Length: 415
Image 1 (cartoon, rainbow, N blue to C red):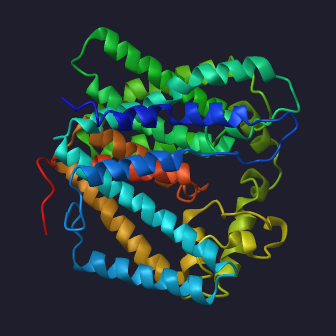
Image 2 (cartoon, rainbow, N blue to C red; image 1 turned 90 degrees about the vertical axis):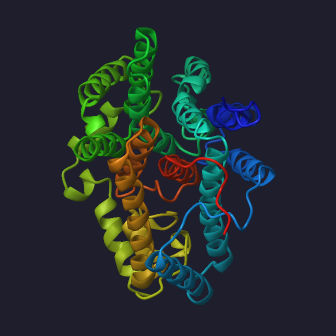
């Protein structure tokens, strides 16, 4: 059994968007159409994870992720390039350093979660996966109330806090991660009661309905690709494909029954926008031009880049004011140059292969759900900022910890 103290984390994770949405709406004023929220509670979850890990014995001597020589070399190389790019080339060096600190914080949260999974002898892992997927069910009553009250109101800011995330598209990113992670819940419900299996299927339909309703196209494509890849790599996932296809179709049908509150929502609006486009760039919502422009700017400092999170400070013509280029590869090239991109990509690919090969040898439902959610966000990062925005980055760190945590037991090994 997981001790009540540790259940604080899944409860906080599951209720975070609801709490954020309530807080943001309490500060909302009609006509306030700013794109960002007034508050975020994500640091509360991160600090809670870190404090709980430290209080239960995590120290600098704990070795939960062991890097080999090449991985360590890639990490050192990336760190050196990232700091050099921020110091030498960044128009806003403080912004670059704060961004790098946030990346470090996400990595620390993953390590702390690994420690907590270890000392709880795996009992916390399934709770965290379930909590992540239940987030959207718990948030749904607030969404329904806001929808009923403000539907048709042109003065209401649907791109801000009601979703519990920074922007409607970030909401779609988190839903894509949940749709992938739901595969783990489906595997966990096998050989359980019929009631539990039906409840799991209903949750899947809800997540897919919200994903379609969010209006994201890249999220749908990314989850389908992640499930297909999982079915190829992991034998247990092949049995989930028919049920996954069923909930996708039912979710699509359900989403079409609820009119979207604005043009930013609804898969039908997104498809209509795509089919109405007359150019390739129009079909990609301007992304092809953005990527070419980003690459050109990346070549201004091709070796070590312009510094992390500097796009907003660069004079990029029609894309001036954009914070990220909607493509993780272009973002890495712009931020860290060729040297930093090679080091970071090598480290991330090595880590991905570690978690994937571990599940190929000894699969478990929680790990398979985490990897599917992780792969969905990785694929999505080729179209949008899932590896840039803080909420999906938190999901990435959670999924990595859930996947790596399989098989760990007892206390963390001392150095």
